[in-house]
Image 1 (spheres, rainbow, N blue to C red):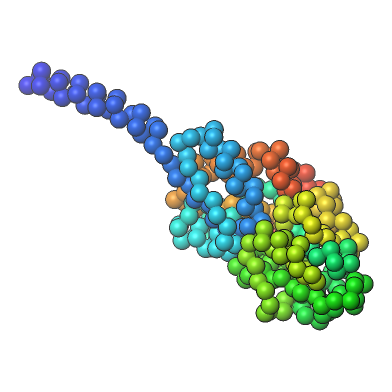
Image 2 (tube, rainbow, N blue to C red; image 1 turned 180 degrees about the vertical axis):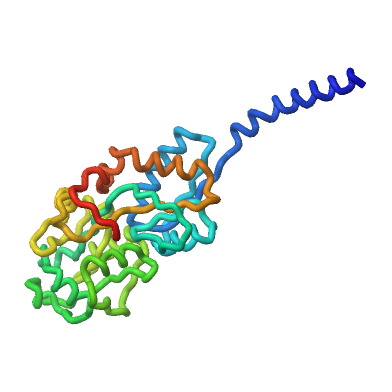
Length: 273
């Protein structure tokens, strides 16, 4: 009996030794969904992280901030990316990873390089319909809107529109990349998009109230259209999800290269963004 038990223990230990490498190298899948404004940073960071951690696979997609929050709350995804704060009763853990600036962009043919916030409000509320009424060339204003699920739209509402409502109807684009492509090619068009999508593109990124849309002006508090970028996790998110988020936050070179702002560079702090 003693010999049999010893054999069993030895066999069990051998099997355990054989299984250990399998457990250690088992793939971990992480899903991140949400903000299109944050998408370039999350995508590039995911690729770099997976090269360092080949046992982790990260699937990244957009869909909008509210989609990211909703799917994280329902635990359909591990990380919900968002330009806006999740509801207080969401049960989610908030990780602020960077700051993003948003630019109001117009087709160069409009002849406009800057607008006041009041003029921008009047355009998106449908009160201004010709560019000549705001100092541009004679031609129809064509507004490209963002869907209601868009965090970019929520930030634009909060920082520009105030109590004015965006006029519904017309063309709506969910993809930030497609917004830039449309504005570059469609005469008379105007929209708004994260800075990360505007670099090197054939669009006019407008001054707002005379202030240029730059990272430096956001850091100092002079330029108004910006937000923190959030990556939300839930109690069921795997440890690799939070490790990946730490990697995103600490990789300052990538944050700055892609046109985002490192949080520690901000001279101002706001808790409601």
